[in-house]
Image (tube, rainbow, N blue to C red; front, side, top):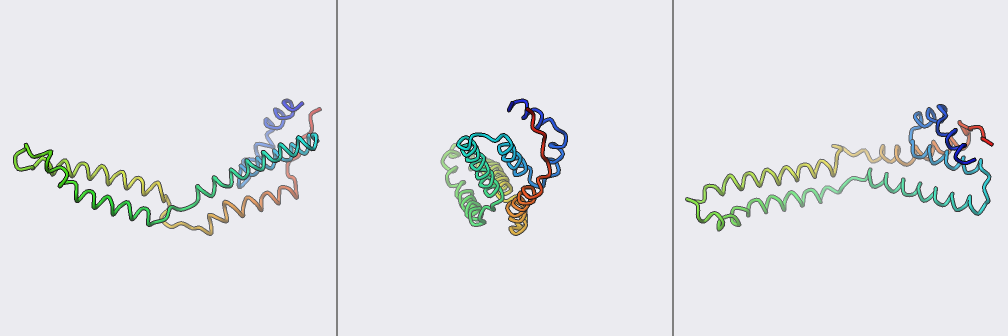
Length: 168
């Protein structure tokens, strides 16, 4: 019964269209999971256990979105850049002894430049990955990741836009 119902439910084009049009697709899918549980009229103990798992999934989704949308503090980036600059200025002192056998230590200069370019490039990539936005609109991020899905969930629970037929 469950497999047949699930296959009918997932393959229904109306369900797919509802998910495509949802502003926050994971919340819409969780809402449909909850509706399906209610429609099956399970044993209350089993339904409570399943709803607990769905709630934990929703909590994990919310925590993941908050981590994803949280900016990295700027002082981490500044400290890394300053430490890297000091390290690169001290690098020739560390390379002086290994290049003692060369004439006048000239090869130390290109080695220092190449190492510096590689490390500064890695630092630049790390900075871009830490903060991909030039200006972080926290208000808009909170609006889209928290308030929007909650309001959509409330509307969905009030109007119940999609009710598949129960397969018996």
